[in-house]
Length: 439
Image 1 (cartoon, rainbow, N blue to C red):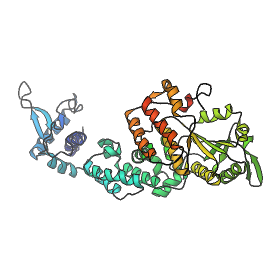
Image 2 (cartoon, rainbow, N blue to C red):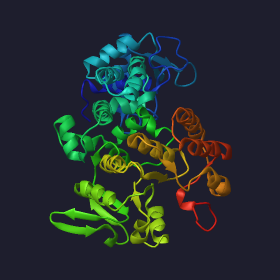
Image 3 (tube, one colour):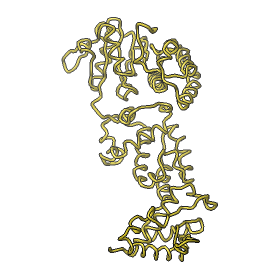
Image 4 (cartoon, rainbow, N blue to C red):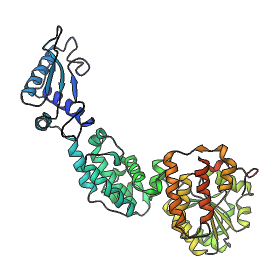
């Protein structure tokens, strides 16, 4: 067996320092309750204590003795029995830490503190809207305290992936600041000058956005793709899925909205024609629906797109949080049709309410609760799932925020939040049944 001269020293120092950086004593100057330890047996060195490992064990033993002499570690020896005087454990105490780090540095060791410093340097120059500022106002001091909790990653992962964490922070802030909707690789090129970088940090970016953007507080089970699409990162051609009446004039041709069965799937590029068609048809009501099957069943139960449109209603599927393109289309509808009533049918939970409030803020007008009312929740509470403590906290915070809003839609919205808290359950809109529930 050929053993590099540096290998034993690297193995012992890196092993002890890795344990220190993962342990509770990391960052503590002294008074460690438990010192990082390598057991001098097959648990820590299975190859050295194997039948053919005598040469490796000898070199490790010599390296340990030299490192102890240099003040880099402490050897604890057996005090009795046949192994008396032989090494039992290798320990790293606070008194040996500086010397161990200096010796490891010369062997190419990368300190966890360096990873913290690199991320802190990036975070300290990033800026954005109020919620981004608030997040980084807490994050930067935490990183300087060697605390990774606000990033939602372990110290071990932070050390291994710190370059990607820096990139994810950069991407999250860029998306929070607002980007023109585009496909992922195009947005990646805008942010990084490389079309593939964002795909490598997609999940990390989404995780950070959830932590910094209050709209996701208490929201569960949203995919990375859906979340990023809410910030303009397109994963597929944007479509407006809707049902109603109207004549769309496109490139010299006319398409009737109610000819599409069961619903229309309109390309984003038709947005202006879509708004014009709905407006000219005498728009009276816009109903946005969070989930696909309730959207389809609502239209089917009302006799199809033509029947829905005959009353001046337009039904639009949001697919959870609406994409920026769909949001812009709804805003245009609101501006062109100030007399129309806008209402939203979503899940009776934190996520559904956040979607409603997001749409309401973008529309700048009342957005009425449809079907998922307090009365429906009270009648169907046996069908619900228990609220978590996080969800309860998010609802209470939302209750305070909504109480400060003006509009004749607010009392119903507040009663919905109160009923969720009182009943202690959340209910998906799929539980709605016209035969047993209020409309």
